[in-house]
Image (cartoon, rainbow, N blue to C red; front, side, top):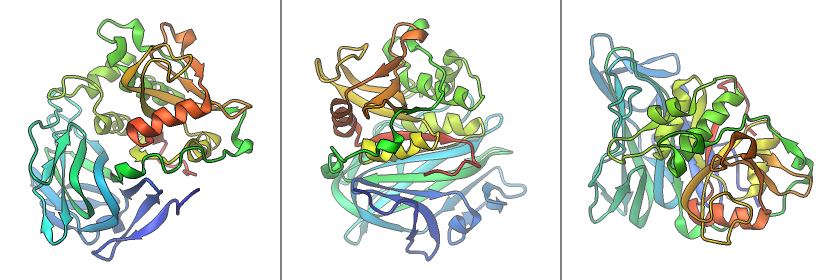
Length: 355
């Protein structure tokens, strides 16, 4: 079961942006000059396909046109930016239910330096921000985004917004796989998060990103990736958009989406694109896992074995050599979809065609 993939979604302002539409979610990707054409620019200009500060400006804001998508009650943004020195980027979103707009919700301040932080305490009758996820109290079909750039040399070359309907998380469960994609693995170096002081169970996300970066020839030590994704307000390295932004800062095209099934994930790994995936499980729900249970864990899907079971680089393994794991397909898919709605980091070179 596949909905239209990589189609063009008509925005209310008349522009078109690359879009992934699935039964459980929609991801709209802005990364071309035409995607920003109808936006309001204040102190910001376009240089090629990237947003940059206008000459002489120390900060500036782009406000996009309202975007209409299928009904959703969760929204997670992601972005790729260059933030030299003390430069920074903030992404904000508001939603419309009926005729009323919500407040502007902020996803914090992203910068390559140590000042990056999400923003706590954002909650009202409309919904709330849970570090990296806007969760609404009622479904909406329209949102608007605002991007603020600060500091000389700061630029943004990609903004993606994933909207999801929590009631549809399991809509793709059990879809039959494509046997042509089985028995194929992407060569992703194996790295354990457990080898480092302070790592333990808490560095799964940056370790997964470091493994995918290494697959593309960008070798970043795990502690360095953890330092580069640390969120001061959250007090950890698990902020999803900060992790894809970190990969983007190393020249990769990186964004968040929610896939509806392992059948859809097969298309990525068959095309040579590994995925960092987020799942959780209770004792006995994921046979063979190095962790007995987890409230939320990232690992890298590298492909499928000859029987169609997913093959993972699971950073919770005690050694690098033990990272490669194969999990039962049905159990893995259920825990992935029920926990995060199929959330995945898509990280690939900018010139690599996605499936």
